[in-house]
Amino acid sequence: LKVPFIHLLQNAVDHGIETDDERHILHKSIPARITINWELFNGILEIKISDDGRGLSKDAIISKARDQGVPEIELKDWQSLIFRAGLSTKGEVTQTAGRGIGLDSVKVKVEDLGGTIMVSSRLGKGTCFSLMLPIKSAVLDSKLAPDAVRWLDEETAEKNMHYSNQGEHINYAAGDTE
Image: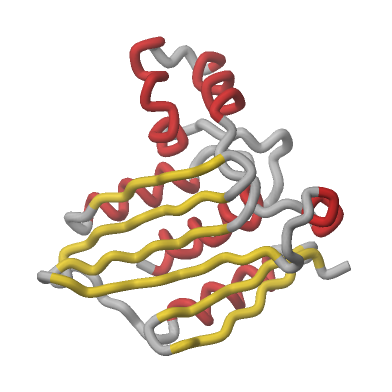
């Protein structure tokens, strides 16, 4: 789960979270919030990773999908298009984003573990990824989240992430370091 977890956090930082200046103009809290919650029930581990960022842009996703030749019938389920290999709405390719491999690899890994991943989003309000994994497949290491945050901090110089562990809920705050 470590690699998918890191991809989802990186996606929130690279795609979802606005800059501090953008958040100020939009009257949003600074720093931004990335929240990770998990719950065990009936042999299923549910992990939710959500942010209070810009949300998914239907127009941008559909435009990129059309550019890649995705059939019109598939565009109706536009939020699931973000899991397609090669699809990225990032305008420029960076070390951590824009190649269109992150969310596709997350979906493949989650499905390999017998799980599912869903996304919900509201433009201007944020995005939430929900992973449902059979407990036999899900090994939840208590060091997973802090390790992921350390990796993000090292790999993403322009962002600063902080976390606080509150029992079963770990909350992250991300914002520009400037």
